[in-house]
Amino acid sequence: MITESAVLAFGERLRERGWSVSCAESCTGGGIAHAFTSVAGSSDWFNVSWVTYSNAAKQQALGVQAATLAEHGAVSEAVVREMVTGVHHHSGADLAVAVSGIAGPGGGSPEKPVGTVWFGFYCRGDVLCTAKVFAGDRSAVREQAVEFAIQFLDQWLVVNAPGNQQD
Image 1: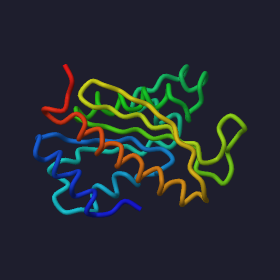
Image 2 (image 1 turned 90 degrees about the horizontal axis):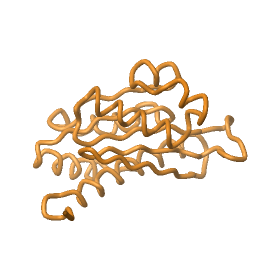
Image 3 (image 1 turned 120 degrees about the vertical axis):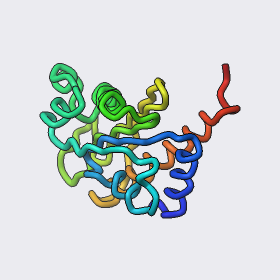
């Protein structure tokens, strides 16, 4: 479980830069936004969140293409890439995350088992996507996904700190 102190430290790093973070969530159902808004002062650095649980919501709110969903499925690199790009486009956030996965207990397949979660991350023009397969029940998968997303955002923020970037 992500700790309040970890979220506060992440928020302080954003505040120091004058940056904001936004997110779009599917399988985590707003868990990332909840973690962010659970700490005092988050309005200084947390901008906006979308819970785009359905494919129609991903298309309408974030601009995910119907063809991308049809070809790759909602739980895919292509979809989270379009989701996180849409988050940045609609929010202007310096840092963003998009999440789409299969929390279970049903919905899995041999190619995408229950616990598969795709993440799209955006940092000042760079997009990185990665997938994880988490173990446990629905609640555990969602909790692990929230924790991974916030930890990854924080690590990427540290790596992209002034003086840490390679030219």
